[in-house]
Length: 159
Image (cartoon, rainbow, N blue to C red):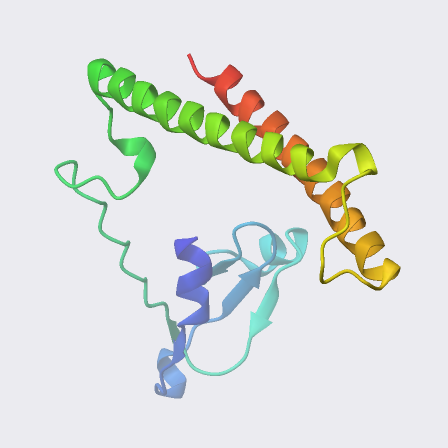
């Protein structure tokens, strides 16, 4: 990682012709820039000669590690088992309350639907309006039953 960053940041420094040495770029992870190998070694390693003046590699700073005092991720902090049991109990109570309310709503909707034979209302002089309302009630019952099953699955997952 540092080598790649360093390679991205290399700068060509203009030097005198007498001070120049041959610099090679050797492939492979990690890519290597070196002037300490011979021509024969460079050929054996499939290194390329870099033209121009000597190069300088600037290494990037490593990011500071997060301190242990302040966890930056949820997985870093451990929760007290008693506190977790308390949270699980609260979650169970909330889900059971939602379950009871959903069951009550389903029962009311099923009462309104009356097995598809509900009485027509005064505003449903047009028979199609009645059929539309029955279709909406039937779809609502199916949706509410699906919601009930999802709530029961969530409750069953709790410890």
